[in-house]
Image 1 (tube, rainbow, N blue to C red):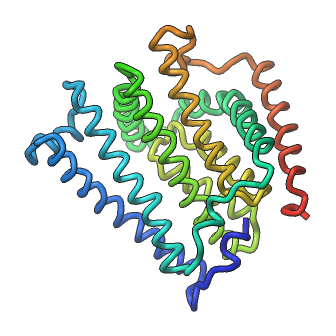
Image 2 (image 1 turned 90 degrees about the vertical axis):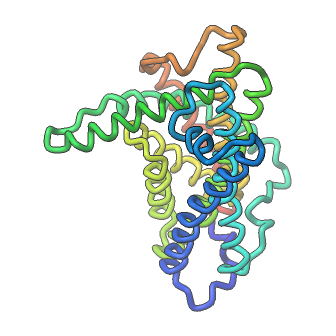
Length: 311
């Protein structure tokens, strides 16, 4: 994991100062690139200001709002999670981009193992997803529970709208916007930078992995999905830490998001009978146990693929 920052020039800045600067960049970029995206869709679709804002506040009444929403999400994500980290690497770390995107020389085996590990994890993590979705808060936190449930309902409605595909073109657009861009950008930010900086601050890779995973989980603002997302972030963190290749964490992230989108699309075109959006319960515990054990064995084998990183 530390191989990415070891050749950078951080000047007199401490890891904590760099984390603070990076956080400021990201927050500023979320506002700036959201504003740029709004202007872009006004130009592309000949919207006025009111129509442009209406896309964000109430898009569900029109099928034509889906593409503008995807553009807004893509531009904002690229700006905050790709442009900002690359700017930070160049300006604040005076580092090189290549180490963040390198693949192993013999890439096929670790990539295939990453794909299967993610599939096993998705099945095993379904138990945690089901538990987190049914958490009951104490009465003293009823105000937070009401807010979280309202937020969850809004995000669920938006996700359903964006992932109801009228054709393969919408599926491919979603694959880029919801799977590919977050896979590159979020791994670059949360694992490539935040996890590395925490690693330098604490001199403990495990603390760095779990802290960055917690921030990753909270950042998505879905209380009823935060715990499984923390575990997912930790898995990406260990894939990166054990291999030394951030690109493998990006592959895992893409598989996690892209497989769900693909299953949704196949379900909608009646290619398969399984719809992940309509699954209310996790598989039987023995099935979860089998996939958990298989994933654990594969993780052990994956770690041993890179003995020089774990010596």
